[in-house]
Image (cartoon, rainbow, N blue to C red; front, side, top):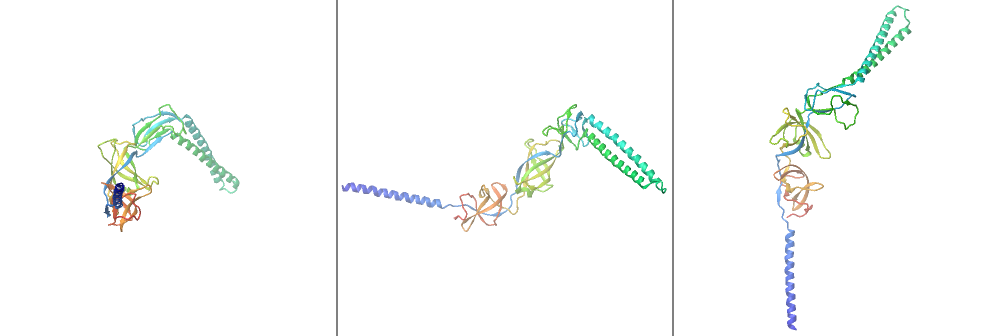
Length: 362
């Protein structure tokens, strides 16, 4: 019986020893887990020079779609797709017999009204001359003659305005190029009837584009717009023409940011006399950025980007301080930041969202 109690006691003692060892090991692991070492870097003020690649699109410098201004039949089209035209050159001639007849009728009415006015004016002039002899013409008759002359003058001017309006409409029978360019669309042929006020989705009769000079349009993010200046030379490439680099000059800036995308529209003028580039091509701008002299440079791993903000974690008196920042140029794993910082501040190099405000940092 003593032997049994002895064996039971031995087993219980061994169990207690094992349990104690396990608790000590667990406590040791917990203690180690609580001590986290963070690599700190010192904030220094400098700029990052880099090349920013921005998507862009080539557009014609000027473009116009030509729709009929009057209803008529196409008489002649001396141009076709690809035709090079000069400003003022005839692109199309239309026929509209009703317009021509209305113009003739309006001109005849003007001639009649003008003749009536000239006759009234002569009558008034004669009466006015006669009235110099006292008692030859009554003042009332002279006033009536003067009123009729003025009335005929107004009528003549009104009829002339109507005639000039029909003349203007007649001028639309000949379509001329508003600028030098290339015909890029032709959707009409001789004999076709063109109607004013056709459906808005109808194809234009002709489309003219200036392609010897192009606009390269890009949306530049808010962070970089201050680094662009009018007259600055810009380099760009296009996947459609591999192996070649092109240049242009910054010509226009919107000077206003798109509220949705926080970017500014910038237009770059590109000379294209050899017609190598085409409107509609996509391109990529190679924008050389000098950097911001008032920026601080940190590893990209130091910046935390959440759904609400961007921030870094500064360590001061062994406490974590979350500092909101905005970012600038990036290069080789480093990034420019702007915020409530000063040179010499300690920043966690590899930050994460688990670190909370005022958390103790060893």
